[in-house]
Image (cartoon, rainbow, N blue to C red; front, side, top):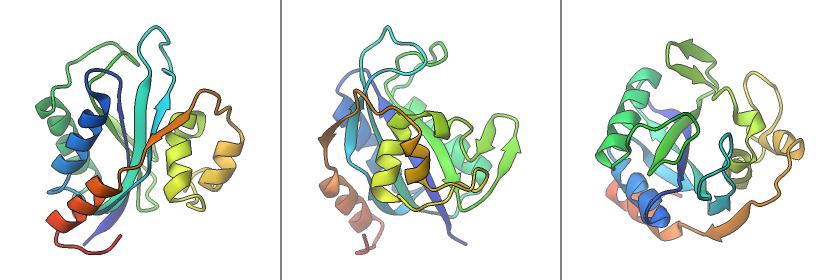
Length: 177
């Protein structure tokens, strides 16, 4: 059975756009019918003495359970070159599960919805681009409403990934967008 998931992807080391593009392409076996937000450059969050991030959100369908999806994302991050760092520190690639259907779920190391999404304009700006009316299953607010409560200063639209997402759909055997 397919489940609708929303993931965030961020990077602030190396060729940031290439990091995001590579991550999306490597998600093909895990996520199908991918729809991507634009890429946004955003100031660092949590630890400010580091380079700016590129961030985006994607949605698609997966047959993976939440735990299997998380494990697959962590393996993929390592394959793409992520090294362990300190909390909120610089990273080559970071992928987080934001939502999984309308599931509210918590096990050690995984909370769905992502517990800090309502605090993070760098996630909500791209999320609102692709799903402004999506309702947070715990907070009962739309993504647009959550974003309205945040300061978006310093978040800048950088690029659109239509080609990457279109190529991903073709690899998945889908013509849908």
